[in-house]
Image (cartoon, rainbow, N blue to C red; front, top):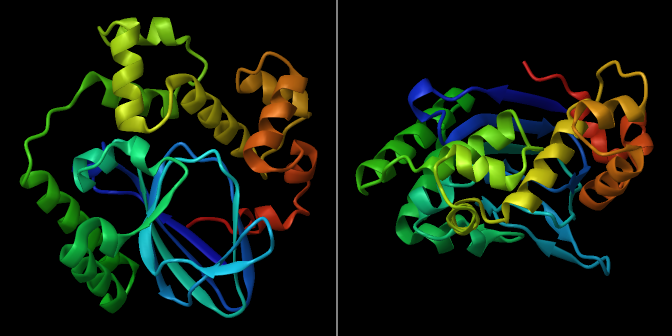
Length: 268
């Protein structure tokens, strides 16, 4: 498999964390874990099936949004594939798609359903693009055009969402709301509207993702990862990790789980 990430242009970095591609020459099963951000996905080669808990297979979309989630999913394909992804901060949903982020929490939605004719045009442009650079340019144009057609201001809660993701998932909510000059009640309401989750659950998922990012890094023990990521103790870390990944952290970090296969590909 090949996994690459591409940074966004600076003027869109407040909404887009990065672009990514994942390509494979053969069959693959992807294990989707808890995620505090939103992904806009385009399957430009091959189409995955979603595996239900019963084992039943159903076709996934060709292009669509995957909202913030704490629900585990599996997708599979038996042939070569290519996926282009846009990794958005969650407040991109209301700003670009005219809907509260909470409506997509733990959900997926086809792009054609969300944007009608405009979604079909965007999908076609991505599918016809010659390379990843051109696909990135198409998404940047789309983002700029959507922002230009609606009046938006940078709300303090947007910075709070980005700050939790980047720096401080363990800061108490009462303290965090005060830092952005909002009452705790205002902060909770705005946060759920623009992030799709309560600040507490969002922070727990971000902390889990920070722990998962230690994959392939030299660490002395699970306890050291727990301490580094702000967990109360190792048992709390293990419990959260199992909830948000479906795996014991020891299995995850062993490098022998199919759920971590894409992580073994070094981004360029």
